[in-house]
Length: 136
Length: 154
Ligand code: SF4
Ligand code: SF4
Image (cartoon, rainbow over all chains, first blue to last red; front, side):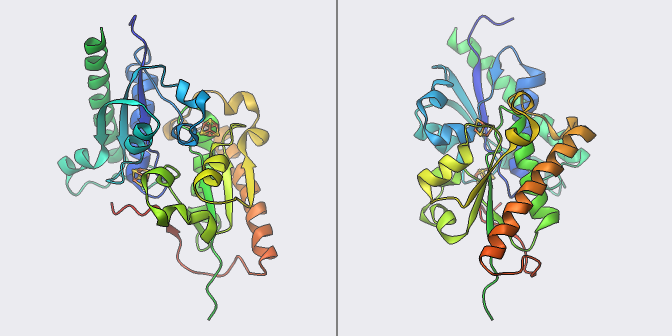
């Protein structure tokens, strides 16, 4: 078990496109299954409110943002609220490696969409481990 | 011909609470199945990451906020950056605080019980949706293509 505090991994959860769902599911997979002892997530909408209590959730720990599209909502919101971003991941960068893939819809992923989402989660988990090492 | 009325449904989509998952899925159900032709939504963080056009959302559309828990982030963020909402659906009041505040659910872990929660929340959104439609003197069964107002080009 890690003795460091947890890295914050924050998804955009975009409503209108499958890539927002992939960002959300990749983050949930990372914090709940791949590295629950080293990473946690926060509600992005809570951060967006700018509440002191919500921003305290950053816990002075590094953040990884995961965004569905070039609007980069998670990265921009976390930066605007003073989060310490160590990595900005984009679902579209991974999708470029899977030209022609049909990942599903903003409501539901296909088996192909889940496989790509797990690939994104593995990337996030790798960065979580690296960031924890850097912070020691 | 008069423009058909569209109603905005803004989900908190909280990533840290099961209520956020139910909020997101119930909002998607409005868009996909229940009122596809008259529902518009927006990715909530676009109020910060987007521009003036995104921040006009609640001024342009009568808006229902769908919040996973009593923090009411969708309502408060919409009102802080965009405009007053017409009503709020509190998911936690429908499915219970304890479950709403438990860790977020992946869509692949949804059970029939969770699906029933989504249906209940969607029914409450629909009720508020139709009240707004009726108050505006429009027929929510009118047809026009649905849309997401997130502004992203992906
Ligand atoms: S980054 Fe794109 S998909 Fe994600 S919330 Fe923003 S507009 Fe929506
Ligand atoms: S209303 Fe609750 S579940 Fe939704 S984003 Fe805020 S804290 Fe998270």
